[in-house]
Length: 122
Image 1: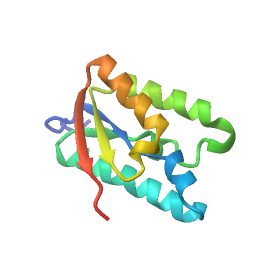
Image 2: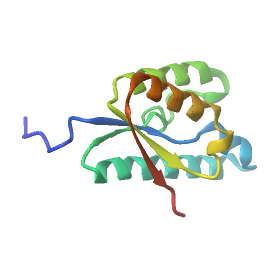
Image 3: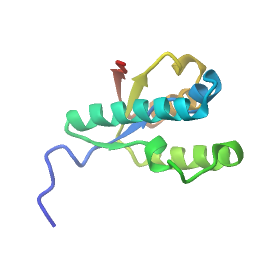
Image 4: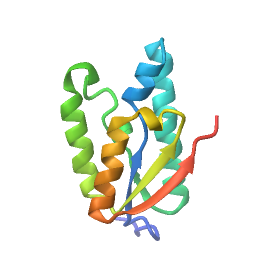
């Protein structure tokens, strides 16, 4: 195996909205495009800090059907958060409506994770 990149051993969970975006937009295709853009922006911000991003939105893309497997997806997100050393909160207009993000941030604080934030710029 190759040499480990400096700082890459720190895994930072990317906390970005999902359901709040879907509920706030009429067209699902457009909403999903926005959801993935938020997750990618947060992941890039983590990478630019020299850490390894871990985004449940991107990891579970096309894996879970949120309409019937929401609880499984949220459980999976919680598992990913628990193996992380930090959390990157992607600030978007949807954050105040995202119950999932609120739960993830609360758990990150309980776990004593490093907390980072980035602004999404369209």
